[in-house]
Length: 302
Image 1 (cartoon, rainbow, N blue to C red):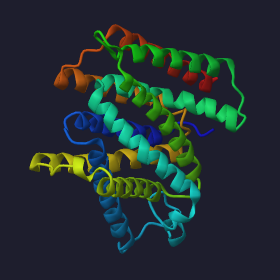
Image 2: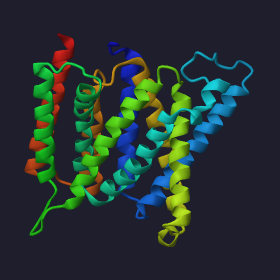
Image 3: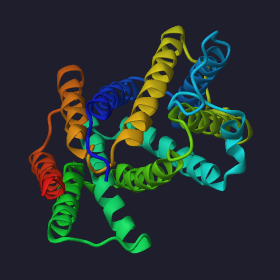
Protein backbone atom coordinates (compact mmCIF):
# COMPACT_ATOMS: atom_id res chain seq x y z
CA UNK A 1 0.00 0.00 0.00
CA UNK A 2 1.32 3.48 -0.87
CA UNK A 3 1.47 5.85 2.12
CA UNK A 4 -0.19 9.23 2.03
CA UNK A 5 2.35 11.83 0.88
CA UNK A 6 2.27 15.62 1.00
CA UNK A 7 1.67 15.91 -2.75
CA UNK A 8 -1.15 13.34 -2.78
CA UNK A 9 -2.77 15.05 0.21
CA UNK A 10 -2.61 18.48 -1.43
CA UNK A 11 -4.06 17.11 -4.69
CA UNK A 12 -6.87 15.44 -2.73
CA UNK A 13 -7.66 18.67 -0.86
CA UNK A 14 -7.70 20.61 -4.15
CA UNK A 15 -10.07 18.08 -5.72
CA UNK A 16 -12.39 18.25 -2.68
CA UNK A 17 -12.59 22.04 -2.93
CA UNK A 18 -13.30 21.89 -6.68
CA UNK A 19 -15.98 19.19 -6.30
CA UNK A 20 -17.68 21.18 -3.52
CA UNK A 21 -17.81 24.27 -5.75
CA UNK A 22 -19.14 22.16 -8.64
CA UNK A 23 -21.95 20.81 -6.47
CA UNK A 24 -22.86 24.33 -5.38
CA UNK A 25 -22.95 25.58 -8.99
CA UNK A 26 -25.14 22.64 -10.01
CA UNK A 27 -27.76 23.83 -7.52
CA UNK A 28 -27.92 27.21 -9.28
CA UNK A 29 -28.42 26.04 -12.90
CA UNK A 30 -32.06 25.43 -13.81
CA UNK A 31 -31.60 23.40 -17.01
CA UNK A 32 -32.13 19.71 -17.94
CA UNK A 33 -29.60 17.42 -16.27
CA UNK A 34 -28.47 15.93 -19.59
CA UNK A 35 -27.70 19.41 -20.96
CA UNK A 36 -25.79 20.43 -17.83
CA UNK A 37 -23.76 17.20 -17.86
CA UNK A 38 -22.97 17.59 -21.56
CA UNK A 39 -21.74 21.18 -21.40
CA UNK A 40 -19.79 20.63 -18.19
CA UNK A 41 -17.92 17.65 -19.64
CA UNK A 42 -17.40 19.22 -23.07
CA UNK A 43 -15.93 22.43 -21.63
CA UNK A 44 -13.64 20.38 -19.38
CA UNK A 45 -12.55 18.17 -22.31
CA UNK A 46 -11.75 21.19 -24.49
CA UNK A 47 -9.66 22.72 -21.70
CA UNK A 48 -7.75 19.49 -21.09
CA UNK A 49 -7.21 18.93 -24.82
CA UNK A 50 -5.81 22.46 -25.17
CA UNK A 51 -3.45 21.79 -22.29
CA UNK A 52 -2.32 18.53 -23.94
CA UNK A 53 -1.59 20.28 -27.25
CA UNK A 54 0.28 23.06 -25.48
CA UNK A 55 2.35 20.51 -23.56
CA UNK A 56 3.32 18.65 -26.75
CA UNK A 57 4.23 21.82 -28.64
CA UNK A 58 6.34 23.15 -25.76
CA UNK A 59 10.07 23.58 -26.58
CA UNK A 60 10.76 21.53 -23.46
CA UNK A 61 8.06 18.84 -23.53
CA UNK A 62 7.44 16.71 -20.49
CA UNK A 63 9.08 13.25 -20.55
CA UNK A 64 6.84 10.38 -21.46
CA UNK A 65 7.11 8.83 -18.03
CA UNK A 66 5.89 12.05 -16.40
CA UNK A 67 2.44 11.83 -14.81
CA UNK A 68 1.18 14.73 -16.90
CA UNK A 69 2.81 13.66 -20.14
CA UNK A 70 1.58 11.39 -22.90
CA UNK A 71 2.80 9.28 -25.75
CA UNK A 72 1.21 8.04 -29.00
CA UNK A 73 0.60 4.65 -27.43
CA UNK A 74 -1.09 6.19 -24.39
CA UNK A 75 -3.27 8.38 -26.61
CA UNK A 76 -4.84 5.25 -28.12
CA UNK A 77 -7.02 4.86 -25.04
CA UNK A 78 -9.99 3.85 -27.16
CA UNK A 79 -8.31 0.46 -27.76
CA UNK A 80 -8.61 -0.48 -24.09
CA UNK A 81 -12.09 -1.83 -23.22
CA UNK A 82 -11.74 -0.61 -19.63
CA UNK A 83 -11.92 2.97 -20.91
CA UNK A 84 -15.26 2.27 -22.55
CA UNK A 85 -16.63 0.56 -19.43
CA UNK A 86 -15.49 3.52 -17.32
CA UNK A 87 -16.99 5.97 -19.83
CA UNK A 88 -20.35 4.15 -19.80
CA UNK A 89 -20.46 4.23 -16.00
CA UNK A 90 -19.45 7.90 -15.95
CA UNK A 91 -22.08 8.74 -18.58
CA UNK A 92 -24.93 7.54 -16.42
CA UNK A 93 -23.50 8.43 -12.99
CA UNK A 94 -22.71 12.05 -13.93
CA UNK A 95 -26.28 12.59 -15.18
CA UNK A 96 -27.69 10.94 -12.05
CA UNK A 97 -25.48 13.10 -9.83
CA UNK A 98 -26.69 16.32 -11.48
CA UNK A 99 -30.29 15.23 -10.89
CA UNK A 100 -29.59 14.50 -7.22
CA UNK A 101 -28.00 17.93 -6.87
CA UNK A 102 -31.08 19.54 -8.39
CA UNK A 103 -33.65 17.63 -6.33
CA UNK A 104 -32.00 17.03 -2.94
CA UNK A 105 -30.28 19.20 -0.33
CA UNK A 106 -26.62 19.75 -1.11
CA UNK A 107 -25.26 18.23 2.12
CA UNK A 108 -27.46 15.14 1.81
CA UNK A 109 -26.23 14.25 -1.68
CA UNK A 110 -22.58 14.89 -0.84
CA UNK A 111 -22.83 12.81 2.36
CA UNK A 112 -23.87 9.79 0.33
CA UNK A 113 -20.63 10.08 -1.60
CA UNK A 114 -18.73 9.07 1.53
CA UNK A 115 -20.06 5.54 1.15
CA UNK A 116 -17.97 5.03 -1.99
CA UNK A 117 -14.77 3.77 -0.28
CA UNK A 118 -16.73 1.25 1.79
CA UNK A 119 -18.50 -0.06 -1.29
CA UNK A 120 -15.02 -0.34 -2.81
CA UNK A 121 -13.92 -2.46 0.16
CA UNK A 122 -16.82 -4.86 -0.40
CA UNK A 123 -16.01 -5.00 -4.11
CA UNK A 124 -12.38 -5.82 -3.32
CA UNK A 125 -13.55 -8.60 -0.99
CA UNK A 126 -15.90 -10.28 -3.46
CA UNK A 127 -14.01 -9.68 -6.71
CA UNK A 128 -10.37 -9.46 -5.59
CA UNK A 129 -10.71 -11.83 -2.60
CA UNK A 130 -9.08 -9.36 -0.21
CA UNK A 131 -9.37 -10.18 3.50
CA UNK A 132 -11.94 -8.35 5.63
CA UNK A 133 -10.54 -7.46 9.07
CA UNK A 134 -12.60 -6.57 12.14
CA UNK A 135 -12.02 -2.83 11.67
CA UNK A 136 -12.94 -2.97 8.01
CA UNK A 137 -16.16 -4.81 8.79
CA UNK A 138 -16.98 -2.28 11.54
CA UNK A 139 -16.25 0.61 9.16
CA UNK A 140 -18.54 -0.84 6.49
CA UNK A 141 -21.38 -1.43 9.00
CA UNK A 142 -21.08 2.11 10.36
CA UNK A 143 -20.98 3.51 6.82
CA UNK A 144 -24.17 1.77 5.77
CA UNK A 145 -25.88 2.73 9.02
CA UNK A 146 -24.89 6.30 8.25
CA UNK A 147 -26.21 5.94 4.71
CA UNK A 148 -29.58 4.74 6.04
CA UNK A 149 -29.82 7.67 8.45
CA UNK A 150 -28.84 10.12 5.71
CA UNK A 151 -31.68 8.69 3.62
CA UNK A 152 -34.11 9.58 6.41
CA UNK A 153 -32.81 13.12 6.06
CA UNK A 154 -34.69 13.24 2.76
CA UNK A 155 -38.11 12.76 4.34
CA UNK A 156 -40.81 14.89 2.73
CA UNK A 157 -43.71 16.00 4.90
CA UNK A 158 -46.70 13.77 4.33
CA UNK A 159 -45.03 11.79 1.55
CA UNK A 160 -42.57 9.56 3.38
CA UNK A 161 -39.13 9.15 1.83
CA UNK A 162 -38.19 11.11 -1.24
CA UNK A 163 -37.55 8.48 -3.95
CA UNK A 164 -34.76 10.63 -5.39
CA UNK A 165 -32.70 9.91 -2.27
CA UNK A 166 -31.67 6.71 -4.05
CA UNK A 167 -30.01 8.73 -6.82
CA UNK A 168 -26.87 9.73 -4.87
CA UNK A 169 -26.69 6.23 -3.36
CA UNK A 170 -26.69 4.59 -6.80
CA UNK A 171 -24.24 7.24 -8.02
CA UNK A 172 -21.93 6.38 -5.12
CA UNK A 173 -21.86 2.74 -6.21
CA UNK A 174 -21.01 3.77 -9.76
CA UNK A 175 -18.33 6.21 -8.55
CA UNK A 176 -16.72 3.40 -6.55
CA UNK A 177 -16.52 1.22 -9.68
CA UNK A 178 -15.09 4.14 -11.69
CA UNK A 179 -12.43 4.76 -9.03
CA UNK A 180 -11.39 1.10 -9.05
CA UNK A 181 -11.04 1.14 -12.84
CA UNK A 182 -9.20 4.48 -12.78
CA UNK A 183 -6.79 3.22 -10.12
CA UNK A 184 -5.91 0.21 -12.27
CA UNK A 185 -5.49 2.35 -15.41
CA UNK A 186 -3.22 4.84 -13.61
CA UNK A 187 -0.52 2.17 -13.39
CA UNK A 188 0.27 2.67 -17.10
CA UNK A 189 -1.64 5.82 -18.15
CA UNK A 190 -0.86 9.45 -17.16
CA UNK A 191 -3.62 11.26 -15.22
CA UNK A 192 -3.93 13.89 -17.96
CA UNK A 193 -4.82 11.27 -20.58
CA UNK A 194 -7.15 9.50 -18.15
CA UNK A 195 -8.99 12.70 -17.20
CA UNK A 196 -9.20 13.98 -20.77
CA UNK A 197 -10.69 10.75 -22.08
CA UNK A 198 -13.27 10.65 -19.27
CA UNK A 199 -14.47 14.20 -19.92
CA UNK A 200 -14.44 13.78 -23.70
CA UNK A 201 -16.38 10.50 -23.74
CA UNK A 202 -18.94 11.77 -21.22
CA UNK A 203 -19.46 15.07 -23.08
CA UNK A 204 -19.77 13.48 -26.52
CA UNK A 205 -22.05 10.76 -25.16
CA UNK A 206 -24.53 13.22 -23.69
CA UNK A 207 -24.28 15.45 -26.79
CA UNK A 208 -25.42 12.49 -28.92
CA UNK A 209 -28.19 11.63 -26.46
CA UNK A 210 -29.30 15.24 -26.39
CA UNK A 211 -29.37 15.59 -30.17
CA UNK A 212 -31.25 12.36 -30.86
CA UNK A 213 -33.42 11.90 -27.77
CA UNK A 214 -33.71 14.89 -25.43
CA UNK A 215 -33.26 17.70 -27.96
CA UNK A 216 -36.81 18.99 -27.46
CA UNK A 217 -36.11 19.46 -23.73
CA UNK A 218 -32.93 21.48 -24.20
CA UNK A 219 -33.11 25.27 -24.04
CA UNK A 220 -30.73 27.99 -25.12
CA UNK A 221 -28.66 28.99 -22.06
CA UNK A 222 -28.55 32.63 -21.05
CA UNK A 223 -25.30 34.57 -20.90
CA UNK A 224 -25.02 33.99 -17.15
CA UNK A 225 -25.56 30.26 -17.64
CA UNK A 226 -22.80 30.11 -20.26
CA UNK A 227 -20.51 31.68 -17.67
CA UNK A 228 -21.63 29.03 -15.18
CA UNK A 229 -20.92 26.26 -17.70
CA UNK A 230 -17.44 27.70 -18.28
CA UNK A 231 -16.80 27.72 -14.54
CA UNK A 232 -18.14 24.17 -14.29
CA UNK A 233 -15.80 23.02 -17.06
CA UNK A 234 -12.73 24.58 -15.42
CA UNK A 235 -13.64 23.15 -12.02
CA UNK A 236 -14.46 19.70 -13.44
CA UNK A 237 -11.14 19.52 -15.30
CA UNK A 238 -9.24 20.58 -12.17
CA UNK A 239 -11.23 18.34 -9.82
CA UNK A 240 -10.84 15.13 -11.83
CA UNK A 241 -7.22 15.88 -12.72
CA UNK A 242 -6.28 16.48 -9.07
CA UNK A 243 -8.23 13.39 -8.02
CA UNK A 244 -6.32 11.22 -10.51
CA UNK A 245 -3.01 12.75 -9.49
CA UNK A 246 -3.81 11.97 -5.86
CA UNK A 247 -4.79 8.37 -6.66
CA UNK A 248 -1.60 7.92 -8.67
CA UNK A 249 0.44 8.78 -5.57
CA UNK A 250 -1.55 7.14 -2.77
CA UNK A 251 -4.08 4.43 -2.07
CA UNK A 252 -7.76 5.39 -2.40
CA UNK A 253 -8.50 4.41 1.20
CA UNK A 254 -5.49 6.36 2.53
CA UNK A 255 -7.02 9.50 1.00
CA UNK A 256 -10.39 8.90 2.64
CA UNK A 257 -10.01 11.12 5.76
CA UNK A 258 -9.28 14.20 3.65
CA UNK A 259 -12.69 13.84 2.00
CA UNK A 260 -14.24 15.44 5.08
CA UNK A 261 -13.14 18.78 3.60
CA UNK A 262 -15.61 18.33 0.76
CA UNK A 263 -18.38 17.51 3.22
CA UNK A 264 -17.71 20.52 5.47
CA UNK A 265 -17.34 22.95 2.56
CA UNK A 266 -20.49 21.68 0.82
CA UNK A 267 -22.47 21.93 4.04
CA UNK A 268 -21.21 25.46 4.61
CA UNK A 269 -22.08 26.58 1.10
CA UNK A 270 -25.54 25.04 1.32
CA UNK A 271 -26.25 26.59 4.71
CA UNK A 272 -24.85 30.07 3.98
CA UNK A 273 -26.04 30.61 0.38
CA UNK A 274 -28.99 28.24 -0.01
CA UNK A 275 -30.38 28.34 3.54
CA UNK A 276 -30.32 24.53 3.74
CA UNK A 277 -30.51 23.42 7.38
CA UNK A 278 -29.49 19.77 7.98
CA UNK A 279 -32.05 17.57 9.74
CA UNK A 280 -31.41 15.52 12.88
CA UNK A 281 -31.19 12.24 10.94
CA UNK A 282 -28.81 13.74 8.42
CA UNK A 283 -26.46 14.90 11.18
CA UNK A 284 -26.56 11.45 12.83
CA UNK A 285 -25.81 9.78 9.52
CA UNK A 286 -22.86 12.06 8.84
CA UNK A 287 -21.45 11.30 12.31
CA UNK A 288 -21.69 7.55 11.58
CA UNK A 289 -19.96 7.93 8.22
CA UNK A 290 -17.16 10.03 9.75
CA UNK A 291 -16.83 7.39 12.48
CA UNK A 292 -16.51 4.72 9.81
CA UNK A 293 -13.76 6.73 8.12
CA UNK A 294 -11.97 7.04 11.47
CA UNK A 295 -12.13 3.26 12.05
CA UNK A 296 -10.69 2.63 8.62
CA UNK A 297 -7.93 5.22 9.06
CA UNK A 298 -7.00 3.79 12.47
CA UNK A 299 -6.85 0.31 10.97
CA UNK A 300 -4.46 1.54 8.25
CA UNK A 301 -2.10 3.06 10.83
CA UNK A 302 -1.77 -0.22 12.76
